[in-house]
Length: 134
Image 1 (cartoon, rainbow, N blue to C red):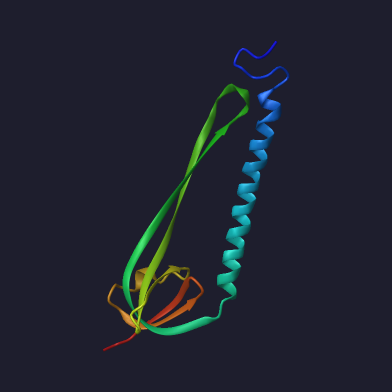
Image 2 (tube, one colour):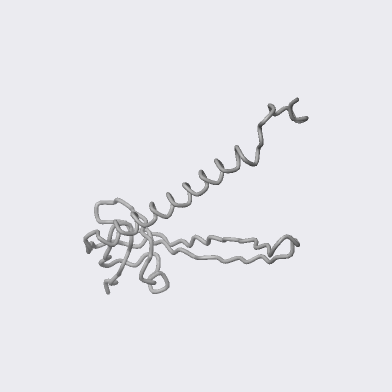
């Protein structure tokens, strides 16, 4: 005799499907961590280049994260949340190309759109900007 919900006899959802879902979730999280680490290492090991450029745009990307924590089986728990802001600066180079860089050295507040000068970049990061006077 089968399950009243149509599952074949001997099929137990919790034993058969849940472990597969957990393994897939674990693989996605580990894969994301590895991808992030590889991307960081690539940028960190990239040669630093200094090029004359103009700042044509600045933007912020605020990312929110919320966690729900339960304590035991009583259903009582708490929720915690955090946010992180990423700052980006778009440069236009003398040949007319534009490229957006992640600000990893906190220069976002020290520069303005329209500033021209020498931008130091490492991969996808902007690490310095020396404004031209005049």
